[in-house]
Amino acid sequence: MGNAQGTFTVASWDENTYAELDGNAKLTRATVTFDFTGGVQAKGTWDAVMCYNDDGTAVFTGMQRMTGQIEGRSGDFVLRADGTFAGGEARSEWEVVAGSATGELAGLRGAGSAVATSEPPGTFTFDYELG
Image (cartoon, rainbow, N blue to C red; front, side, top):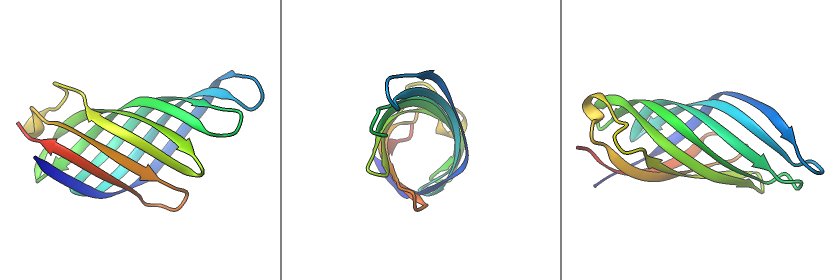
């Protein structure tokens, strides 16, 4: 099993509220693009839904399409990315969606995690097996 580590930055963030809840709580949809460097060289596009609590913390889930390279092998794959936001820190857990990898990454399996704060870049680690 391989292990990739690296950093990422947010290239764009488009988030819109679709339901106001009690207090400051709300439900939103977001499309976010990321640039990944290190063991994964890729552009990620994440479509997510988020539930913000009255205190500003949040829970989120979404699908992230990754286009790029792992170990010099090129292709696309999809991650399910779920996480939380609290104390100025976003933490997410990733899992490759089975059967989603294409090109030289076909058969990719794996899982990882990422952490981002208000000070870029964020960091990630990704354990994977290439088919």
